[in-house]
Length: 307
Image 1 (cartoon, rainbow, N blue to C red):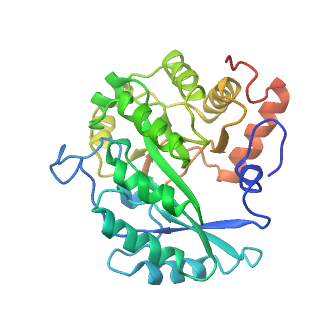
Image 2 (cartoon, one colour; image 1 turned 60 degrees about the vertical axis):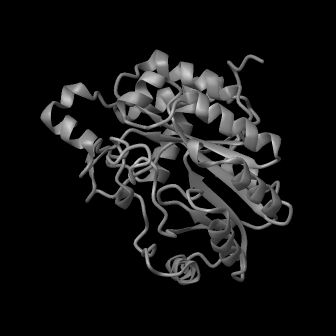
């Protein structure tokens, strides 16, 4: 996808690679301090990792075995010769540094792997972990993906996140100061957040030293605390229609620093896991509709960004 309206992921990645690069997810079997009792045992109210983990990521398989299965899964895309291993499930910096180094090095040693994307929580990046990532980034593409989810502390408390926004700001700034590429994840439409609060989050993120932003529409996923709340009273968690969400995404885009890559605007959990919303759109269909609306509005990234 190529457009001048916003900084896309392919355009951003061309700064680092001359060829297209495919992400391959792995699950090393790490836990989360919001599940193992360090912070809580319930986890975030929206979270069910099974809803977004690919079938080839079988905990118990080695990283090498999972990557090989991922390569088979993407065999229908022969144009991709280079791969980034995405440590996706749970908190992938939540282990002793020597353990992390072992897993990361195993992934980087696989033929065709040119880098890592490491998903984790902002409260799971102590200095020694950042030093490891900074060292790896001298020779490899390394992207630290932080689940910020919201910039509002009342929301974070409501969803049982277990950290505040200040923790996210601290993690982002420390990673940036060490030269580590950093992505932030935001969930749009969390309970208690109306349009004004969401746009306030956009303004806050626009002024942080992030390299990439990933937006996720709120999805109600089976076997979560939020699902129980929604099924008991759907009005307690208002959900956006697809067109409402598209206009909100464009409003967010226009507030962002134009140097921030917008990796994606939408995510889709499998129908077998998702209770709502049901937009009946593939991701590429959503993007086509989004881009048509961007053109209709004459919108572009950074139009409302203020230094």
